[in-house]
Image 1: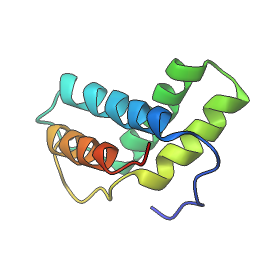
Image 2: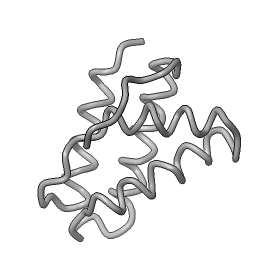
Image 3: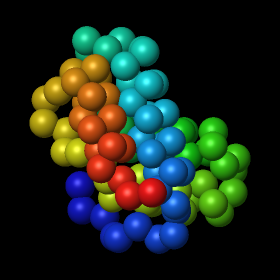
Image 4: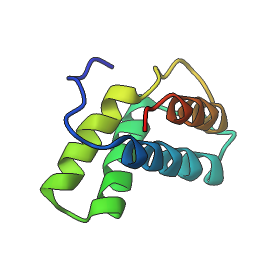
Length: 92
C-alpha cells in the first residue's frame, strides 16, 4: 500500500487505531483470510469509532493507512499480530 506520510496524529492515537483494528480482526473470524479491501474498510470504521464522523477521523485514517503492513495471504489473526507489532514501533 502506497500512501502519503502521516499528518499530525499523535503516536498514542496511532497506537490506539492499530490496536483497535487488530482487536477487531482478531476477535471476528481470526482464522479467515484477510484482504486488503477488508483492512481498508476497517481502518475507516476504527478511525470513525475513535473520532466520530469528523475531519479528525479522516486525518487519523490517512495516518493509519501509512502504517498498515502489506496483505500477503495472512489470516486475520496473523495480520492482527503484525498490526500490534507495528503499534509497538510507533513513537510516543
